[in-house]
Length: 341
View 1 (cartoon, rainbow, N blue to C red):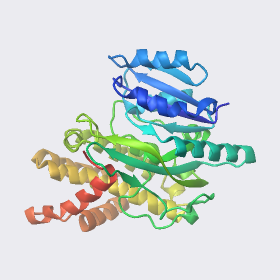
View 2 (cartoon, rainbow, N blue to C red; view 1 turned 120 degrees about the vertical axis):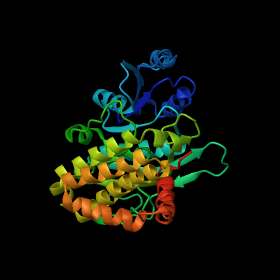
View 3 (cartoon, rainbow, N blue to C red; view 1 turned 90 degrees about the horizontal axis):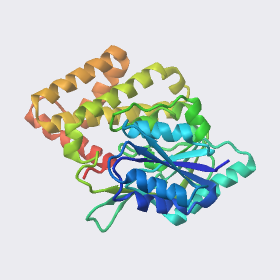
View 4 (spheres, helix red, strand yellow; view 1 turned 180 degrees about the vertical axis):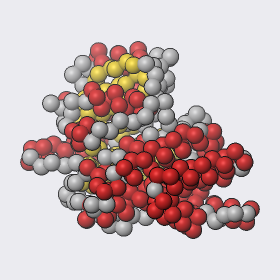
């Protein structure tokens, strides 16, 4: 059995996927690299097959009809045989020194018979044109290089949350909790790091810069203008997270710090939805904001009251043009979380 399964969702990734795969091959026989070709129309499938032929015991090429990023992650998880599971986007890459330390750490846990649910590491915003790259560290949030639980989590600052780039889950945990991301939907990364959390008991944080998250392509999903054009996708994810939170509130509340973290995460996602709607400047999107808040109200009046108070009291201040200027405060938090390009 492999130690770590790494899924690489690929859609028309011919221009950059090789760099990603090459960076992961350093893991050798401890890893399986699942290159998921999500119905590409360029040479992605061919490149995936070439790597699978060259490294048959490490790389597996999986071809499927187009279903979007979430669908490709689902397929990767379904085919994963490793004890742990990681998603690496095809335009990103990993740092060798940190990679080796992560594999050694996971191997030590397996050798000792310890069950680790979640391993956390840093990631780096590799933004095109910037000489200094922003590192997302968690050294002030989590104990370093020791097993910890939710009770040991320190204060989590607004806009500083776990993202897909920073997490490695135990594979069986993801499968047992029934994680399944929606198809043909952007921004499902948030669901990926949100839904498994009620099942996570043990965690470990390595203060190493492992994942390099490339930002700079004009068609990238975190491009500000594209996010505004895909507001319906953001709102869809937002609603799915609300549904999950309300349906599992009993389990979520069983640990106060986890409850506090998950509420704050849902709060920032809702704030981002709202901020983007306001930033778009259209009447149609302002109406969508009302519809979103009414949806939350229909699911849980208590959640609606808490979110509305927090969002309008902390992130934005409405109504009026003057109030919308204060939206910039919330917008800066959104930038910190997504590092728009």
